[in-house]
Amino acid sequence: MRLFDTHCHFDFDVYKRNFNAHLSEACLAQVERFLVPSVGPSNWVRVRQLADDFPAIYSALGFHPCFLAETHTDQLKQLDELLDLSVRRCVAVGECGLDGKIDIPEWQQETMFIGQLELAKNHKLPLILHGHRTQNRLLQLLKRHKFTGGGILHAFSGSYQQAMQFVELGFYIGVGGVITYPRANKTRKAVSQLDLDCIVLETDAPDMPIKGHQGLANHPKYLPLILSCLSELNGNDEQLIANTVWNNSLSVLNIDE
Ligand SMILES: [Zn+2]
Ligand SMILES: [Zn+2]
Image 1 (tube, protein in one colour):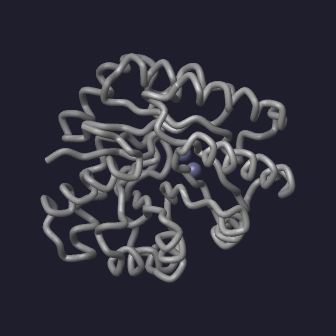
Image 2: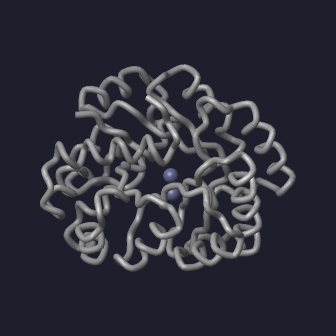
């Protein structure tokens, strides 16, 4: 069995000491590939470096909506140039999107999101979407700007109908630790109804603790717990799910292995 953590912030400080040990722990849990999304110019160098140093790691470059305070639109040009230079190991633009629970003004979030969506079009890259409480608005913007390059709606939570609107636009649904909580009724029901062909798995480590591991930094080594929860929800066996979501992960990120 091989698993792909399609969203983990492996560049964050919590993993910096003994990074190799963290990577081996994940590999022992059969998590063999990682997509490390960036949050903005502050970690582009580190994320690119990880992807250069470790064949198991791929990167995404972009501006996370929650980290926009010290950025300005001129930096989109920087991102454009960086995407030209990073072709091999940078497989997506992101994470980018909108967050409904932060103080950054909506206009600023939307300007940066639209800028990145246009860059993704030009560089023919998929998007890693962050849509906390903003999924409907994201859909509107993707449609209005005729984005057809697909990608991953990460940390999905919501109804089956909402998920399918993204699937219809060519996106995969990033399923993470939220499904391990029985109180996440709506999301668990939605995920149980989704076709395996549109699902990828993620931990969002160090965020999104998995049930039973609250209070600790999340880790990609816990991805198998999400897999087994998904298996309980949709009744497919773990091996079948693992194979399918592995292929989905390579396919959405255009990785040829
Ligand atoms: Zn996110
Ligand atoms: Zn993230």
